[in-house]
Amino acid sequence: MQTETSDINEGSEASEGRDATPHLTERATGKSTVLHSGFLHVVRDEVMLPDGKLSTREYIQHAGAVAVVALHDDGRVVLVRQHRYPLGRVLLELPAGKLDNGETTLACAQRELLEETGYVASEWAFGLEIHNAAAYSNESIWIWMARGLKPGAQQLDAGEFIEVVEHTEAELDALSASGGLPDVKTIVGLHLLQRWRAGARSLQWHAATTP
Image (spheres, rainbow, N blue to C red):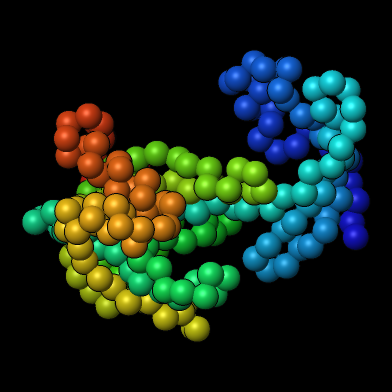
């Protein structure tokens, strides 16, 4: 097990500056690696609590990911169905994937949309950033909107099995209401889409060649 010292855990300095809540802030006094594989980096931090007592926090360090709300001209949304092994079931989800090293969120969104669905979009708009597992991971998911779709062939990785499907907003809303849409990034993406279409959320659309 590797050990290193750290004055403050990743991200907490920025959040402390935003929140200015020292009565809630936990500060890292040391860090050790529990597991470092090709996909997961699990660390255990020694932390000082707001009352001065010491404790530990175990969490997953993650490079982050993107999800894409890809829209046809008639309003249908492009989604994927894939088996999620930890849950033992197939989920209906937005196209999504992990950021490569040094990759921007827009570049990742464009790459994942092409790889998982075969579609290329002519216009993109950033939606929002979510923290999907803040209790045990520093992962962010950046949700992008895409339109002006042109179809093509999927470019799946070896061992990746994904089915492309399309649903209307009404169909997705009905699935969500019945419990058939449990994936959190997809629920948030649907909410973003509904707010935008209702005129309650503005988006800045850009050509595919610009962020």
